[in-house]
Image (cartoon, rainbow, N blue to C red; front, side, top):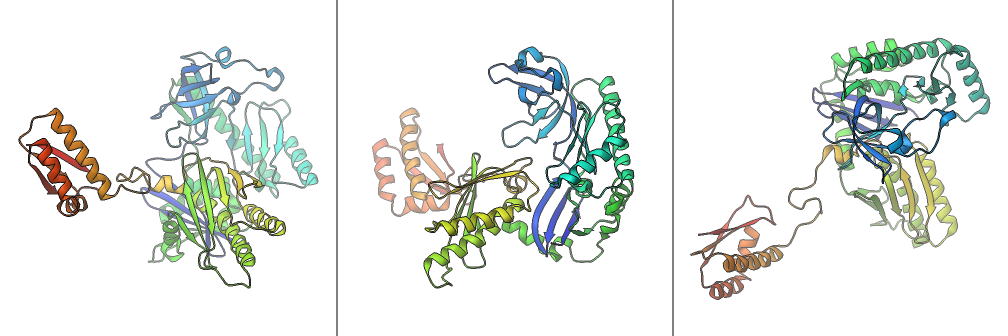
Length: 483
């Protein structure tokens, strides 16, 4: 399936859309003020060890301390043992670490001491001494051939190992040699900087989003990479000439007047990807709810009644939903635990067909995932590796009015809270008058249906109560002023 990559540059952010047959499949956004940290290498300082959790907190110069678990501490294969973390590390110690997961929500970045540096064809493992092959290269003969070729290029007495990436299937020996030289020089620079620096220090920063697109996202199906900035087109051309020459013919500078993302309908797709409801072509729809613990996706038939019987309607809706859900997971970059509630199907054959269609659609996803099939309750449980913030977390923040609940208290609920607060204030303070400042809906309620309740409270406390409507107040906001 032919694929195009669209790159929109502004001084504040870089946005990338991956499209197949003109339909947006993936969105990547990197803001200049908050670039992702995965892949960055730091010289850090251990500030606290938690023996009970077998973890350590490491200061690497970020807003929150980062997290290092004992399982992520590299040990030589021949001496690997189950030492407790307090025997391996000490507070105040300097340590070279790499970020393997960005800070998400309230959690700090997750670290590893096993360093890996990605190139175009290879991933360099400076502490290891073996050659691995990407699991996506399935042919055993191809895997063995790649292993033999790389073994010839890497001197036996040199430290460090490599993993052959998926895109290296058709790489030449010259491309491998260039990648090896680049990766080894990068590691030498990192070690040299670590020797003369004190913690916390950034030793190596992962490539920018535009550069990572050329290194990681381009595949045999990619037919064009469209860039809407002349300056960045030149920068990426220079990067491609040095590191990814095979990508050079795909680069295309867009010079049209209409914004690139508008032309290809990407702006509209971004807005849709932030909505809770996703409409299906058949008339059904999905409801996607993202929470701290998991993401739930509910499938509904909606107005779809286009086939002969209800079972077929459900089956067809679920089939379409399976494909749409797979796309939405990539588009929104949803990770962690995901529960899909397909519409209940009586037929085991229908269930198998829907699950098969779902797995087939998920096969296009570059992110590691597992699908556990239908549970006894008819839900599909799955996990998708979470390596960066979801699209909603990048572009949005919790609503200040409802604090992320997605709903607000009714005017009546707020009015009754005000009545209770007035009574509380009257018992504590001896004011001449109490003035209530609240939103228009609450004030209107006190002037109409709840006027008697307010008058009764005024008589009970023996003090006048006045109202003041504040159009700038949110539905739940109010103040009581003592006069």
